[in-house]
Amino acid sequence: MNWDSSRDNCRSLGGHLVIVESEREQRFLSDKVWNITQEAKIIHLEEQSHWIGLTDAVTEGAWLWVDGTPLIGNVQAKFWATRSDGGKEPDNYNNENCAELQPRRNVHEIWFDSLCIKQYKRICETKAVID
Picture 1: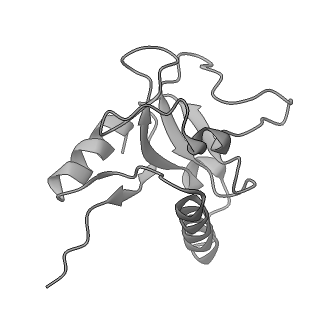
Picture 2: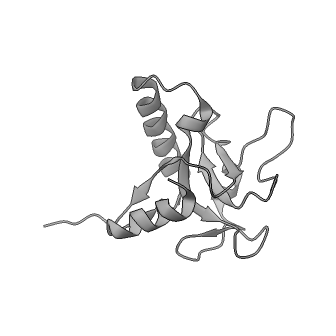
């Protein structure tokens, strides 16, 4: 799904696109996505990518989580990737406003800004229900 549809789908399930709150959570997500894509023998990056709940669609360069929390000043900012040409993400190439996670990179550098209309898998999260 595209980013908007992914966000809406997560909401319809009672959750939201994932908000990465720690390095431990980042490592968990990276490992999980890596294992799933390897088991399914998915080799193309486009097919391995997963939407996360981060966008700068409202104001360019002001990255916000789906709950409205800003990214700036958070430890999570270090998870943006360094591209093969040495440049750093997010680069807003071609007006990219949504964040994706690519599991083949260093766990600290697996976020890329991407066109929100691209079709990727998504990572939803919700609060645990304890009976």
